[in-house]
Amino acid sequence: MKAYLALADGTFFQGLACGSHGEAAGEVVFNTSMSGYQEILTDPSYRGQMVAMTYPLIGNYGTNPADSESCRPQAEGLIVKECSKTASNFRSSLGLSDYLKENKIVAIEGIDTRRLTRHIRLAGAMKGVISTEEGNKEKLISKANEFRGLEGQDLVKEVTCAHSTEWNELPDNEKKYHVVVLDLGVKYNILRSLEKRHCKVTLMPASSSSETILGLQPHGVLASNGPGDPAGIPYAVQTVKELFGKVPLFGICMGQHMITMAMGGSMYKLKFGHHGGNHPVKDLATGKVSISVQNHGFCCDISSLPEKDVEITHINLNDQTLEGIRHRTLPVFAVQFHPEAGPGPHDTGYLFDNFIELMKTNRK
Image 1 (cartoon, rainbow, N blue to C red):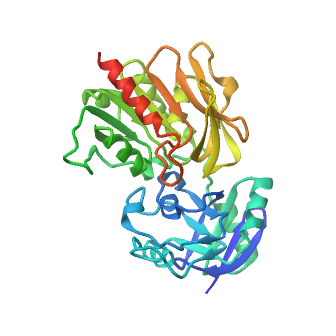
Image 2 (image 1 turned 30 degrees about the horizontal axis):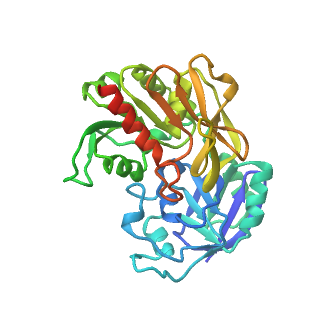
């Protein structure tokens, strides 16, 4: 079956359907990872976006329940050069195409993803539509322009947990620290990274008040990753701000956005975002360069940060954008990249150990 991809600026592609039949709209971005497509699809931070994979062959090792980063796929659509018809992996329980169909994710293959990626790099991430139902170019371009976009939208409310939830994947694991995760769209591997470091993990909805969180008497709070525009969730910024100085606080991706804004920093939208598992970041304290996993379309304006309160800890070596901060006097730090990997390198997992040390020091 034929499928079509139309961008809001009039760019048009014809390919073949490799997922669910239907139509989907979203912001089209590209991801430079060579593998990890299931983790990418199930990352809540991709809510509202359609992902184009730059690697040409996707799906060759299938899918399985263990590799999901949330309860279901969150991306609006998938764009690939070739979707493998064969899954060559003993862990595979379902081929990628069948997985997409089962989860009602519209996908297109057989287009020039290199051309698409180059176009996005030049023109920026933009609104788009994938359809297996409508082939009229003008109609699809019009539909792409009608998509609400991400700016100003609160997509976190669509992916956060509905109520307080205990994460207990390792029930016999000794729990030394109680960490409350402010769930802005958390990935499972963040929770696993905490639990394997002997943390009892409690997820709280993004709308939770600071009073409710502190009422649980946590040793630390982690503000998680999440989708959309940080300006769309001022309530979470307020909650984070009220936690300053009362409990050790660690932010990841959207969590860094919340901490940054709570410190007085301002945000802006990146031209085409950072999406992939090969982004170099430099730790300014040690000079060490790590390869990181990233997935964000917004970034903090470094010049907006109050120098008397905030120290910059990490910088992206590709474009010199902000990747990490910490408060100079309070137990608060955050990074823009994903130290939990899933998918990608494990270079920056030490940040979870730093969080543990911060909670340990605060208990003394």
